[in-house]
Length: 263
Figure 1 (tube, rainbow, N blue to C red):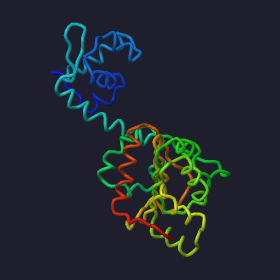
Figure 2: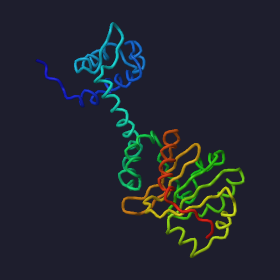
Figure 3: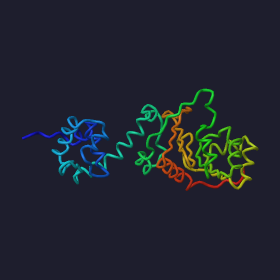
Figure 4: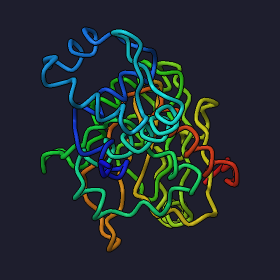
């Protein structure tokens, strides 16, 4: 009797086997189609498919292969895991050294929806600038939503520019930032409240993140380091599922926030 390997090894120990399973997720495929998609030869591919068949993950009829019911169940579970790995593979050192505890559990469990994002490392001369990609695309957006635990010196300059273009601004600040604005008033920022496009809120919750924001094109997240320190590195995502994920994160902090009409 042949001793079979654990299914975990069958699924993940071979790039070709994993590729076959993911290709068959959507529809049955002929062997030539699988070979073309995986850029491999029949000689290299068939032994790996046989292993999948021996473990009841794949079946075939003539030259067409498809997932078994067991294979479908496993592939459905593979996708979120692979997507989550893709998120953290951008830069595991960044994710491992920064705090993500501010993300509520229901969204943390779906962090795979961020997809492949870029880790932005601004030059030292640009650390106080808004991310240029995010800002330029904010001009083309219907709205810009941000949660922040620090007062950016460019708020008073860039938000009026966006509002002149008809962009709605939703800004959620922590109690510490609002206290700072009341102790050291910024007349230009206070004037923003006179514009109906500007919406300011106070979040009573503890917010363990430097800032995160989204517009119609990007989601941006600048995490605090695990020791509480800050740095200028940030995550920038552009896929639609990441923007929807960012929107839900913003709504989580907005729902208990209090509108601020004057400072």
